[in-house]
Image (cartoon, rainbow, N blue to C red; front, side):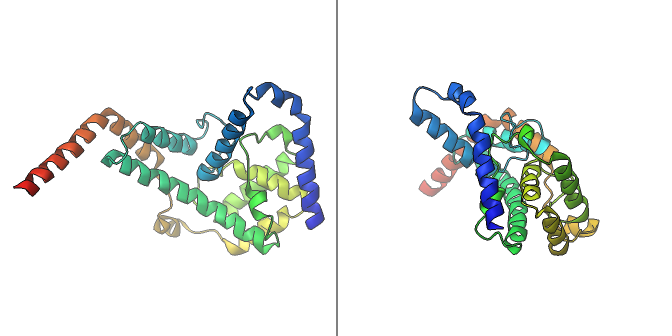
Length: 238
């Protein structure tokens, strides 16, 4: 397993070397600026676990679009306001759901013996490209099997594409079938009633509608907060 994983890492490095010339044209004159920007991308990926990691606009999938819209709305909302707090709750709820899925994958990988390599195998960068995949059709078939035959994903919505890249790696390491078999044992499919009881499903249209409504009355919320504080101060003085 160790030699296969090292081989996988080496091949990844070779693929990166093939694009050195292209990267040179994208690197700004200030190397520190480039390093900071790339580090921010990695932090953003690990924080939000985008379902479509290669989509910089975060608009191709509804769940990514919803999360991105919530984050952007919070950037425009006064910190500490009630609107800011509501947005933070919604953002963390979506992130928690994504982290739970990732933790399930990590549990299965560690059970397969990838104790030290699990985090590396689960890391998908923003530069992930379908063109670089070695076994895309097989990976997609296994992803659909996981989606329909296990509860490793939290909803019946289409599975996140980020896990397609991970399965492609597992196929290369010749452990993909073992992973799916373990996932079936660890996370058998739930019936509809069990899924409703988990409370993990997120109503994306409702979240978007809430953000739009908040954007329309954001100033009013802040005014209410301020007036509430003033009323409280008056009552204290009284």
